[in-house]
Image (cartoon, rainbow, N blue to C red; front, side, top):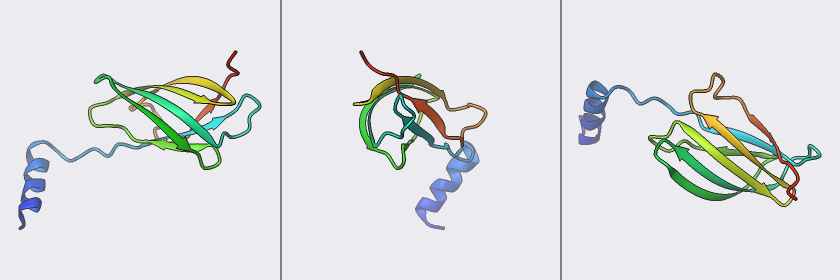
Length: 108
């Protein structure tokens, strides 16, 4: 058994198996309902307060976000030329593999 295999075995034995974190998938639409080709995201992961700002090119309005270690909730601010939205997502939501539909509102 190699060193990495031994460390993996010890970690699983004493810490438990790693729980896979299902990434969240968003479909972003403009106020008319058309998919948005690009979005700017400001993510605030809780409870650790980790923040990140991303620009994502979407695939038919879809973009994927991964959960950083130690986070269980996300406050997400979405902005595009077509509008903006704010979304809150919990990692333990009942249907973590479903696409989260987001419709932007006009910004005045």
